[in-house]
Image (cartoon, rainbow, N blue to C red; front, side):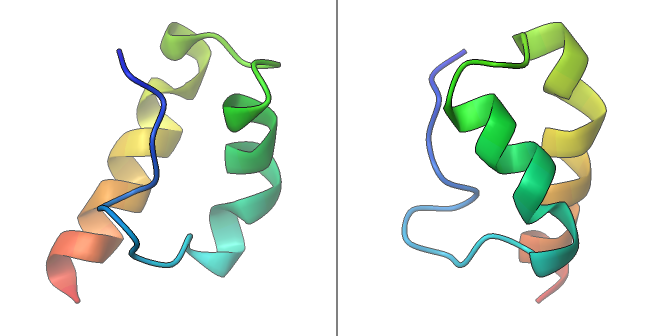
Length: 47
């Protein structure tokens, strides 16, 4: 998995920012972040 922002330059959802920051720093594995990334992507797609 390539670490990137939610959708290009789309803002990171505020409610997920602390955990996503951990992920982007490499503190969370792809597996640990899977549900988090899916939740953030759903927000971007909904908007």
